[in-house]
Image (cartoon, rainbow, N blue to C red):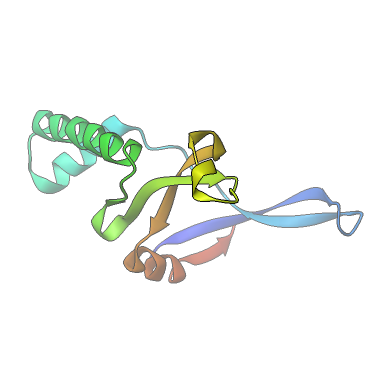
Amino acid sequence: MSKIKVKGKMQRVAVMNSNRVVGRAVRYSTVKGDQLVSYASQSSHIPESTLRACTLAMREAISYFVLNGHHVNLGKFGYLGVHSKQLSAVDYEQVNASLVKSMTIGYTPSVEIKQALASVKFETEV
């Protein structure tokens, strides 16, 4: 069972125009790529050098496909894809690339991740 700690922090809440204690999930450290590869290597009994090469190749492939307009299915993890905001046009002849105002990379979690997230338990940090 996954657990995330919650800690209170005093802050101004503009809508209420007063200071309130707001509970926030504690953010842990960021796991670096080397740590991830090392953990996966130990779990799978695949040499770390082989996993490192595979990881670099997967990163390159994901970048290539996402930046060329595809959504990439990451299995149980979910999907990555390009999302854009653009202006509209009155007719088809006015549609061109200058209507695109911004691009972002979007993540959509899989059903399994959503279900796992729903079962995470929260505990108060003292």
